[in-house]
Length: 149
Image (tube, rainbow, N blue to C red):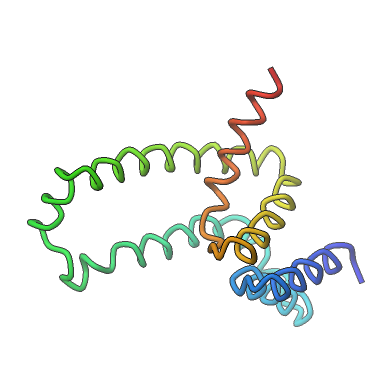
């Protein structure tokens, strides 16, 4: 059994124990791909997985427009209210932090371990969801640069 398999099993266990289904399912899928001899899919996932994940996230976020639950009037109205303006500012910051996170994960993939552990802790103890690993990596990147000065 390779070290990668052991790590994925630990991540699977941590996800199950911490109630983090998304992490558990992700680790289980990778273990199944490896065990079934479909490891060649890893190259595809390495090249396109992040983009595909963001596409599926955006599909979920854009569904209210596709289903006509949100129209032009409601959209325009939301951008003139305090909550909408705050959302624009936070969305802008989150996009910047996510880009910083992608860069950090490419340069320091070992940071992923801390993000996974933090995600499991956040889901288990704070009733969070593991939807922000790129932003979390971006925050880590900004803090790391501040501390490293």
